[in-house]
Structures are given as structure tokens and as C-alpha cells.
Length: 147
Image (tube, rainbow, N blue to C red):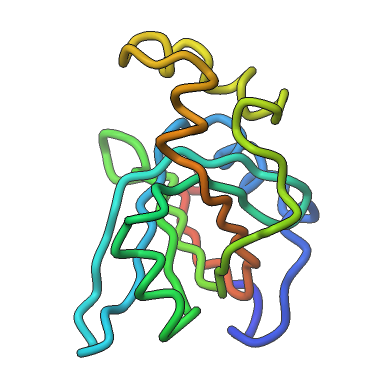
């Protein structure tokens, strides 16, 4: 476990976490509804230094949840045996300064194949997922076997 859940942490100092974040296509983003119910969504994301960037529909419930409570959890799937488990905690909010997805070259490099496979172009994807959300990680919990 790294971080106390308060201040952002330097994820880039955790090589095994960086490797997993950079290699995974899908993460589970969990917000909390106003009545306290956790709500998880599969999302595409990009690690940018010590933060994660994702794009959301401007109608997504997760944005309404974040407006009330910015605390989140973010999980990677691990492997088939339940090894390489990573759970991140942090705060998230709309990032008005992030480029649209269609203009974010590293994001497109990571997801161009998936965007095309699902019938979007970069521009149509950016139109459907027009709101950038920035995740600042404050705590990392991970487990991996020592063998």
C-alpha cells in the first residue's frame, strides 16, 4: 500500500504500477451516487505522468456523481489467476484543459484500433465522449506474487 489517501502520490516511482497502467486497455472507474451507492464503469484511460485521463459522455451518471463527491476508486482487472492486482484511490473531476480525444495523440495511439473496431472515427468518438476527466491518485493498493 502506498499513500495515505490524502495528497497525490508519485505513481511514476512505482515501476510495476506504471507498467500495468500503461499496458491495460480497460479499467474499472468507481464513483459514489448521492445516496452512497458505489457505481462502477469500464473505461478507457491514459496514464499521463502521475494522473489518469479518461473521456466521458457529458450525460454520464459518473459526472453527476463526481459533482457531489469527487472521491473515486480505479481498479485494473489483474490476471487470470488473480495476481497483479491494482486498486487505486483518488479524486477525479472534469479537466477543462485536456485536449479533446481526437486531438490527444497518445490516447489515439493507445485506442485507435478499439475506436475503429467499435465503428467510431476519432472525431465521432470525441463527439460521443466529449468530457475529459482527470484522476489524481492518492493511494495505491497492489498485490503481486513474489515468485
